[in-house]
Amino acid sequence: MIGQITGTVSHKDDKSVVISTGGIGYIVYLPVHALAQAQVSTSLTLWTHLSVREDALDLFGFIDHEELSYFKLLIGVSGIGPKSALAILSLAPPTTLRQAVLSGNTDYLTKVSGIGRKSAEKIIIELRDKLGTIENSELAHASGDNDLLDALSSLGYQPRDIRDIIHKISAEADTTDKRIKEALRLLGNQH
Image 1 (tube, helix red, strand yellow):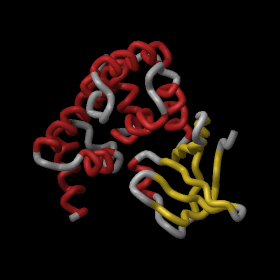
Image 2 (image 1 turned 120 degrees about the horizontal axis):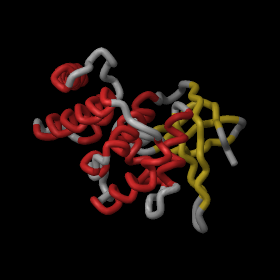
Image 3 (image 1 turned 135 degrees about the horizontal axis):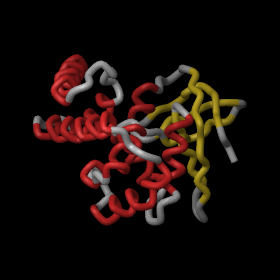
């Protein structure tokens, strides 16, 4: 098993990077926010999970160990494969996923392509006990992220752009209004 990899990013596309280390280039699939941080010709250290199938060996990478832990929890849910788990983690930070699961928020999970209401309910049922209890402040933050996703989508922003921005919003933006304003400011700076 490959648990961690450090090397130079030698190539980047819309789903993966090639990490060159020890004369070998490893294709590593990353969540959207990690792809945004990865730059060609820079050094990168990733926590990894090797998915072994009959016809492929796929390596999935994460900037921090917490994301890797959530990834492993998600692929432990029957019917959720590594690519779906990666798409869920690309939507928003692991804390938002945790809040959505613990509050029973299927709407958050169904925003991921390929995850329907039944799959979302299955994820919530299977992960709820594993993720602990939720505080009221966390519940408000999860609701704010859903409102943020809905507001930016209704303004015509693409899901990929929205996911990138959610990871960049500062912790000081503690209300939905503040999060939307900061997201719009960040999106405006990109163009």
